[in-house]
Amino acid sequence: MLDIHHILKQLPHRFPFLLVDRVLEIENGKTIKTLKNVTINEPFFTGHFPHRPVMPGVLMLEALAQSAALLSFATLDASPSDNTIYYFAGIDSARFKRPVEPGDQLIMEVALDRARAGIYKYKALARVDGEIACEAELMCTMRTIA
Image (cartoon, rainbow, N blue to C red; front, side):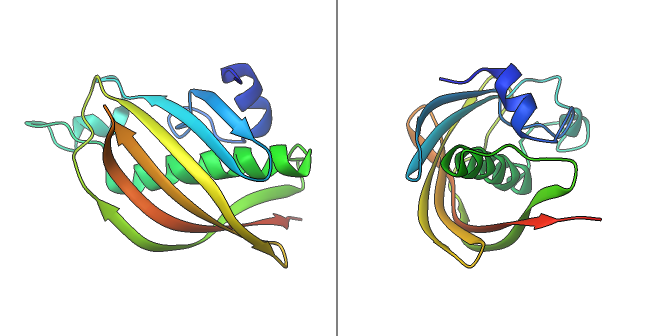
């Protein structure tokens, strides 16, 4: 289990865009299970939607991608540096099955499907109370920046 302090060392994201609160389980090279506590204090809830707050689907996908990045760094036994960044490269088969609302705990499970030529493909899903909220296939890559 990895806490927020370890996550902050691995991911460059910060509030309001850091969307992983804790790593619950990790098996290097295979899977990761993470948690996002969804609170009414999230800035996106003021506009999405004022009468019925719902976490945007794109942010669920981003939370899954951040989880995938944590799995990749653990698998490579590496930490990001100031001259590397982990990018989203693609999203396939994204489906949203239930709304995610304030007070929910988003439990994310990401499995490495394949890694080839610096491109990593994952099968990812997010659940609330055991029900699938979001699922997708993600592709990510690490790149050197100037």
